Image (cartoon, rainbow, N blue to C red; front, side, top):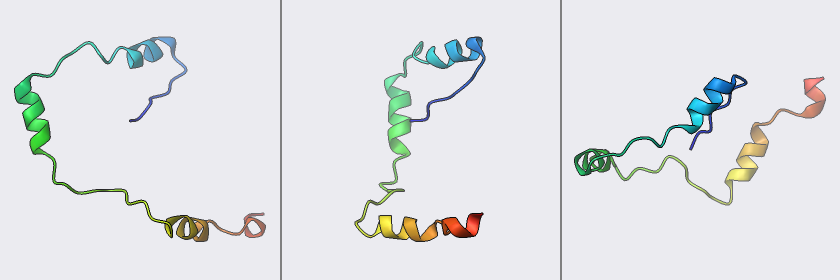
Length: 62
């Protein structure tokens, strides 16, 4: 879920007013039909090490 940010009070209020609608059963069925059973994030024990390797050395950033 993405939480939108704003400094404008009107926009902040609008961002919170997103629950003023309902989806029909047909619309929910259409959304469910989009599922391709594909994961876009795979948690694995070796991933943190890969992420750390992507970060440049702090000394090289000076």
